[in-house]
Length: 541
View 1 (tube, rainbow, N blue to C red):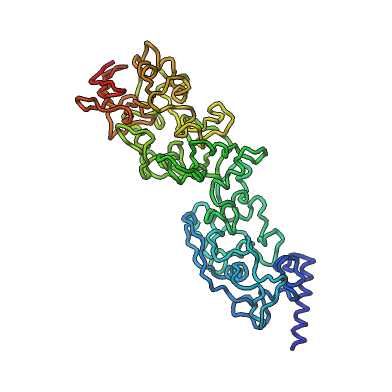
View 2 (view 1 turned 135 degrees about the vertical axis):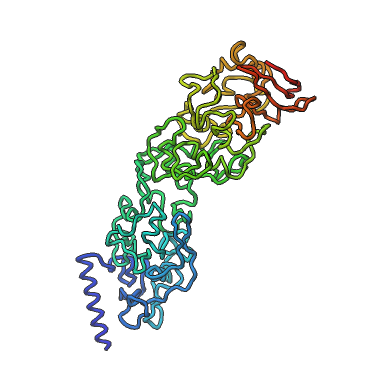
């Protein structure tokens, strides 16, 4: 009987050697753990190759002739709402793979031997790294879930499994397993993949993420790793989204390098808050690149006018005028509304007579006064506008919010609302502190659209502006709110032309206790307030 066993073994080894010369074989891969294997992890004296996984006799009841104990540890499975499935504990072929790759069972511990096979250099399990997954699989590509047409219908970024090529196989229960992507006996394509993944060809057999003309975004491996990802369910190469993006978007030279976003994130006012400390109360603390950009569909063109979404944002989701979610935002403000609309209220940047932190309501067409972000403005008399702007113009959020070092602001840096020297994330300087000496640079943001010579002219459309802005050194923000006044909180008379007083400076009138402005006609109005110690009891102009 012993002679027959050795004869059978010789035949198997000869067949394996023949396959190694004529086609793919496990013999010349790191899965050959025998003493003659090519990898660093190998046995100290064992010459059999298949024995580490299979045995012709005295194997376990698990097929195919499995020669290892199955793991008994409870795993922490992958979990993400985006998958639309909930992978449970590993099953099927995945559990077989994990009998080596979770590090809980010694490599030499095979069922058919009375004692474990000794490994060279005292190694017992796979060394820490991408091949030793551990029992926490939350940062690994999901396995052991049913991948069928029902799942594909729930997740539009998954292709129908009926389109899978023959080499990309699901198991008999239509579950995706390790063996869907990996062939343990064939390392022709590296990492034991079932087919080449050049250009993300294997990834694209299941995933349809959209198209982009940005080279680095066209290859999944530029940003993702399928195993032991430090980011968890995002499967990113870094722990955080921003840390994954910035190595390319750091201004370095090269065909695949993006603009220098990293530099703007060192400025005092930033959108990405991954590393910010002592955040102002008006900035949410969970913003990163993916909130504004859909990286799989971004386009290199920066084209886009007024309030339309720029191609660099990709097919990003948003919140519409009515507060409803939209899968693909059409307008720039819909992207901004994801954070700056109906979410939990944040403390305002400036204290106002009328407080409204939901910017969707302040710039809505039904607001009593607003900057024209969604539709053209209400005011038909705005003589200070600089050409080519007219009363029919509609602007975008990034016409005011962006990097002051950007090309758009006259610098050389990256465009977009990433970071600025001027709070809150402004494209140019906009002083809000009382008693600010008037200069055109102090209100450079306003003067991008408004003609400063008309705003402070001795005679003209705004006869009292010079007295207040230059004489009393009152900033624009003392009287005007930048976004607008909700239609449920103000009136077209008392809040005309964005009038909404800064209550840290403007106090109620001492006798009547009124704090308001009345619009009485074109370029005329009256105030009831107390400012800089001067009482305005119906003071008119």
